[in-house]
Image 1 (cartoon, helix red, strand yellow):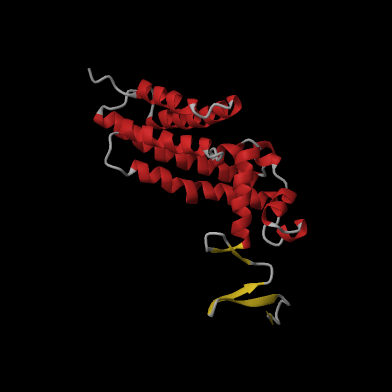
Image 2 (spheres, helix red, strand yellow):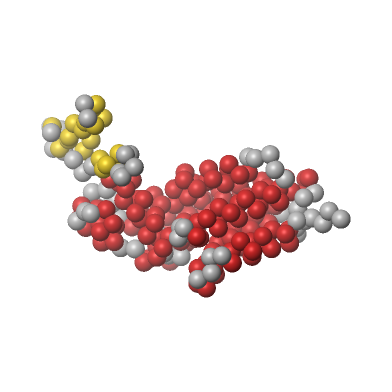
Length: 227
């Protein structure tokens, strides 16, 4: 262990086996995962927070919950996540960095727009059946308690998802595979809201199986009549 003479912070020279992995502040811990990965404690806390928020909603999660989830004392959590605003903003960022690529992978495929919408509904279905519904909606459930900076980041994240989905509706109108009223952004907003609402409804009913049929029915209602 070393000490930074300028600010008095303690540092550890971390090693994995015989390999050094750099100098990190004492508060930044490396954690061995069951699958062999080694992650920084803040990432483990955010992983736990993401799952808890998806299950309980933003306002249903406390810092004690986070501490219990990763085996820390509650005061130690604040070394990594200073307050609820920082937690909310970090989770909102994950909407883009973790879940955005899933949407992009579907949208980038060589499929017609109707087929892409069906595959997008499967992402939401998988989230529901695994107990991990839309993170954006889970965070938005506590929007009244969010600070202005966090609320602005939430809006940006929502707009980014809608923008991605609107690409499918633009394609659908151009190729004639989708038939809908309004602009592609309007249709994409309705699609996103439908997926989030359907997740919430099926969760409330305890009927995850019903999601597939309802989602397919919705996409079929948007599909142009080819007859």
